Length: 292
Length: 282
Image 1 (cartoon, chains in turn purple, orange):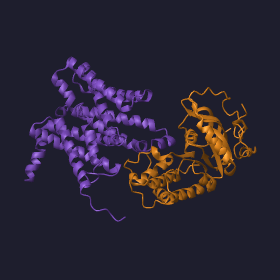
Image 2 (tube, rainbow over the protein chains, first blue to last red):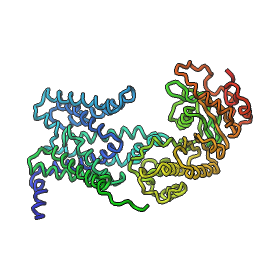
Image 3 (tube, helix red, strand yellow):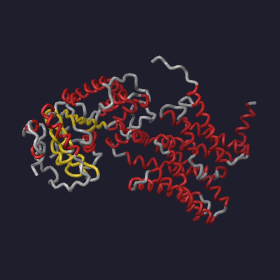
Image 4 (cartoon, rainbow over the protein chains, first blue to last red):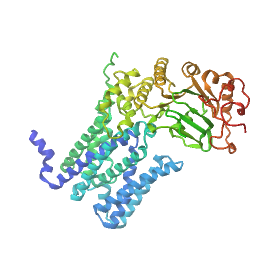
């Protein structure tokens, strides 16, 4: 019985190289994106990351126009566009009356439309679908190296930024009075966000790139009280979703990127219901209060 | 000439927003070891002055001289600016005060005893692992005072530290401020409760955008001075003309500790030109 289950779950990975590659890529992404997502969520920047992920598209599209479906070109283009929009949106917010959410919404709508038009100039419908929804089953060596590299940079980067980043989130004014690190830390963090969006773009496509970043992070909120707990929980969630989504997409012949994000979504809904920290069931059937 | 350690010298200081001064031509020196209350109506510029001293608000005119390193100053803002929903523990919040010792990368673990000691000094024994979101307003303010203890700064600036805090907590925190004073630290606190100021703060700066009076508390907090502060602070002119007073430190600074006596402000309140606090008559 257990043999059958294990075979059902892991058979595809044993059998096919492309499934193993997809798994490695997704696990690398699961290691780096959710911790970044935890900080995004806690800074109330969840929607901002979504907007930035769409902003990656025109940059990648320009890379595509120049070099076809080439990974380095599309990655560099995506990185440049993502960083540009993050900085521009910040600049618009500081220098005009537009608030940050509105300026990001404007930028991302323009970016998404421009990106789709740019790709349609040269590519086919298939190319467009690949770019919008990712090509996790076609990860080649450079793509895997890219995802591994992003995971490495992200984890070391977060470790180096951790303390000032937490201070920036909790009490930015205090950080400003004791150090000038606040601004650089904020931009370094935005850099990590864009890096992971580009990674997510490889695997899950531009529309779902934030899926593995935000859903596991939000899910972790229902299981852990402090930051030190939320980050590992979010990583475990993302890895579980990756394995489940890949298997499911193979067994049920579903598109892979959406299957992974749906698996993460299922974990979120389940946690929303039964999570020990503020889950709905806990709210409905409350144990009697304590004496003191 | 740099002022002695722990002192803050203000020279013709004007701070404000969008060219409108919120603190106007303030001259004087906060002496090392002073325990100074900053008093004035709402909008008098108390918070702005504190923010100016820590560098949060740029000087429109004049300058501030502080001696020593940046870590010489600890600043407690009005606590509304802190995200209390962020999932960290009380001990982590207090440990932020270690920044000058451990920076971004060194371990905080060797300082754990010091952190626990600071928590017990503010009466929060056993709260180390509680999430900051579960603290009451008073407990949170105590935790912020613990962070100030850990910062161990020569100069401590407190912006309305007792707002929304019950009597017991204020008493405990005032005792702590007294202890800091005893250690020779310079303390400046923006306050509203005049009885508290009279009981615990030997010196007072009464501010109403213009400095109204600065000196020993009993001589500053007179009915006349307070009434004048009220009048001055209500006179906000949207279309104010460009200020014609000479820039930077031209005044007859009078601050406590100078040989120049500063006693006549409490006896008569004529126009601003007569008060002892600053500059020559226009």
